Length: 585
Image (tube, rainbow, N blue to C red):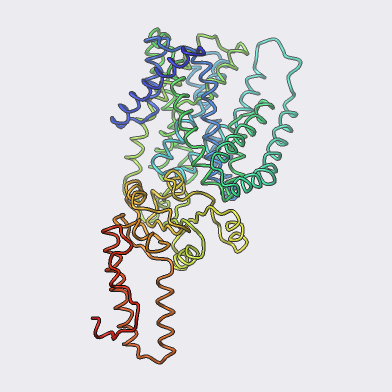
């Protein structure tokens, strides 16, 4: 795109069309991806011609895929990733190989040479990580057994980019490049880079985020998060490897960090915007002329890709002991072509394995297959919504950590609340802003995440949308009624409880939609007063009457203060001298 005013004009046009189409397609229940693709095609050179430079924008927007893999890595600690190894290297490997061979056979039936059929079939075997993972996240399925299997396949596909490029290079008919790096050297470089990222994550990144947490500068978290992604991606790119793989490894190394939720909340907006631009660019690059010249071929080949991949993945799912509904849903979900197909088509073209017109034609096939995905996603939802038998695979759980309760603030108050909930076997996610307290809690075995629990985006990342309890126990009086109304609107399924610092805090939250609010010291003070009266051998019934009278006066006074906003309201109810309890009733 042009620089200066022209770039601003192009940006405004892209955003306007993207916004309009996404709103329309969301309203129709077809998802944002199809809206972006259509918007890009409309403003692109083949329809209205309002915006150009799709190739340069695509290169920039592909960073959104890198950010996506970083966020996915944050969801997968090393132990969980190790648990998925059979799905990654078993199901994932078989999917790429068998789908590639199956599509190669279809292309040979369409009278392509074996070399061209293989050069096209392997890229078509890959699915769209950029399309599938956000869809799974949006419906809360990414951390379920079904979502983990889909992710495992997609992760292996990303890992397979390097060997697929090597295969295409070995098949190349172009003049040999004597300066090319031997395959074993690439393998050693890859292993070294991965080990380097692992060590950097443990010994450099965690101390860096700990320092930033102590400084309390939220903007520095944004910078540090983007630095982490860019640096890891740049390291991999310098070795000719997948940038998304580097970002993913960096994310995995920080998945056990207390700063995970803060990083997710800070990086997520960049990921969303860049992925939107990516699909806009893909839509702009859609060669409508190629489709117009051979519409039946493009449509038929897109259907063939979907059919072959669905059938192969369905059979593999059954072989890996999935129920038939989930196996079919997985096949439909991963049946489209993927964004890395464009990269591999370019490699095949450079190796003189296919003509430029063929690369353009199959780019259109990939885009059309991606356009089918929102419809197929709706169908998979219907398939998987059928009732399960008791012995079927475990039901889907919520996203994030699957916690039933979020405790925000892990000071002296929050610790008691959290420990009592845990004693009842309620799964709890703990959030606090004090790095020193987090480290101290960690030394006692408590896992506390760093973050500002009054930020809606961070609460959402931590799983508030699926939680049943939101327990706000921070120091100070940062909570007010307006904030609580926002929480209730954003997370209507959760019961909200608030720890109030004093009477002023109680007045600030008056009228807020809370299931319960407690002043920090009132219960302990009442308890001590009862103990003191007991030490004087006062009868238990009298002690109960005194407590009841105090609470009645206190509640009435607090109600008047909340209604008027005046701390002096109800002053006559303050007990300032010894009086007969009977005479006060």
